[in-house]
Length: 254
Image (tube, rainbow, N blue to C red; front, top):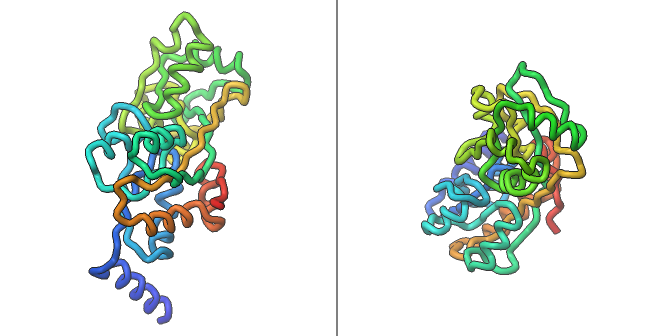
């Protein structure tokens, strides 16, 4: 009976006419963790949360910078730290609002049941890339690094990039699971939650890129205090186990 009373109280709180709505835009790497955490954090801060998703950068219409450029409502934005810093510099996010939440690394998945290539060393990774028939990579932070830095470094002849495809507004793993690409590279947290994939592993340490994903408060936020409270909850100690489970390394919010 007590659970029913508490549940009813929470429901009434979330449907109260005077309740503030906090609008969140979250990028892909943090999405799996965010979706598990958001309901609990919404109840904890006492405000309703509306969520939208998109890449940290790039030309896709749903990329977070493009959503902000269209003046879509936003209070909290969660994306790759360099992209957040750019938004702060451009006046799209509040100065001093950046809070680092997680560290994320790049991994590789293949379609379930297909051979797993060896990528444990840089030479093995290069061999796997050169021998693959097709490669998919993200249009966001990990894909920028792969297409502009790592792939050219491993193959100055351009063979790897010639058979690589940038994926917009969709998880790379979904493309691989459908059999439309042999190898799929993206942030680990964006690969391990997709059915139909076998996770191969992370890039070798020597060529790995660790990306920090951070939260900030949008410049046009109408609920900055509620936004700040939500960020604290998403990065709090109670969130750490969920964050790790989704393939990320939590950075405790101070």
